[in-house]
Amino acid sequence: MASTARERKAASGFRISRKALPYVLSLPALLVCIGILVPFLSAVVYSFQRYRLSQPWARQFNWGDNYINFMTDPGFWNTLKVSLIYAGTTVTLELILGLGIALLLQRRSTVNNFVSIMLLMPLMTAPALAALMWKLMTNPGFGILSYFASLIGLEDFRWASSPSSALFTVVLVDIWVYTPFIMILLLAGLRSLPTQPFEAAALDGVPRTFVFFRITLPMLTPYILTATLFRLLDSIQQFDIIYAMTQGGPGDTLTVFQVEAYLNFFQSTNVGRSAALMVILWAITYFLSNVFIKHWLRLRERARGES
Amino acid sequence: METTSTFEKIFRGTALLLIVLFFMFPILWIFLMSFQTNETILRIPPSVVFTPTFENYQALITGKLTSAAGTLDIAFMRNLGNSVFLSVASVAVALVLGVPAAYAFARHKFRGSEDIAFTLLSFRFAPPLLVLLPLTQYFQWLGLADTYFGLIWVYQLICLPLILWIVRGYFEDISADVEYAYRIAGHSWFATFRKIALPLAGPGIAAAGLLAFIFAWNNFVFALVLASADKQPVTVGALAFVTASGIQYGQIAAAIVLSITPTLAIALYAQRYLVEGLSLGAVKG
Image (cartoon, rainbow over all chains, first blue to last red; front, side, top):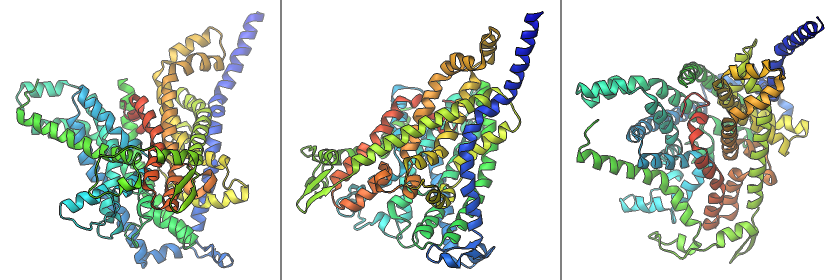
């Protein structure tokens, strides 16, 4: 009898700790992150204030003024335009390139594996340092790329320091760093596709363009969506490459959201405008990440199911 | 299975060559530059023929840059040390906090578990400056401004979601039956976690840690906003170094090489896990 009582006691103790256990385990991680939610709320409050670090006495709520002013503020529309162009161009080009490279490397062979490992290098380089590397290579005095440009007749091509080519240059650096990201995700996707449909198509002598558009592409779609949304979320927030390369310049050529918010905060000390910009960017990314998380979850389920 | 024509072979070969050239050239070029003096760097046309010199690395390591204009102090080794310390400490903290949480999310479906997991995940996608700008003021009030502690805390924004979501996947891959069997044999929850779950998920946890290290090392914006010169990691330090040293291109190249070597080495070592890590567990490699 004594033993069963002890067992029952142990069992009940077990049940209580079992209920509380997951909370106890995840609480520390959560607490650390809750500390982050406070500044997030402050940023929202700031965005409804007239708040300049240079005039702290004049700080007061102006409610929607920061946002309403954006409507007539060419600077804001420029920021929105540049951010969208930057994100759109980089993600589209990286997707096309990444898919192309993944298809080239699809078959497992020593050379292909070696190339795919080589391509990881740019992705593992800190984007800010990658920007510095390209800055050295595009230096008008001795940069190798400036030299190449002069060889093909582009004398005095000024890369990031000219308003006409600054966007091209940072997009190029972004492509250099992030195309491998899309490539390795799509390569993993391609290699995980079932082989039967392809074998059947080969037996029937189906043309390869047909196989690509009707079999490969549809089966790869979840991977493409995941890679695209991942990149889109990062690209619309790009800061490192642009700031390290040109600090948003020349002029306001490259003042994407985060760069503009940074400059507003630290140079013009206009906290209210800076916060409002960040809240708008957050709204965009929130929308995107909700779409993203749905696809991502489905893919994750599938990956777990197959393993 | 499929016939490869000569044309296709040539096309594939050329394409691969161009791809490798485009993606490897910058690293190779900067690497070569780091062994050159300014005179050979500034030659026109540029050439790959030069007598290698270790002067640049020597200057960085000793912290003294001697030029015609005089001696310049470089704090680059300090930046390198900061990077190592910040990344290692951040990953250690993230592992201690994240691995138990990941285990909880993988093994127990409890009230709000998915909400909490997604809240953590959403930090990965929120614009960092949204949090960082108000945080500069909070850190002033809390006395955390320009401290390693404050930086390591903020670095959890990148490290924790990564660790949590990848390690969760590895725990989910372990059959719960093994753990039940061990528990039925009379072992406590903690013993099961330590003796069964941790060793089985060990390689995955190690890989997640290495990836988190890479992300922490490569981060730029957190330290740019929150750290002053003596706490800055290499990403911010290298940028400041460019401004300060002006035309010492060889040293800049050497500094970049030293800054990217650790992450490249780790990436080579852990490449098997990179796909899964980069997609936060959505795609299996």
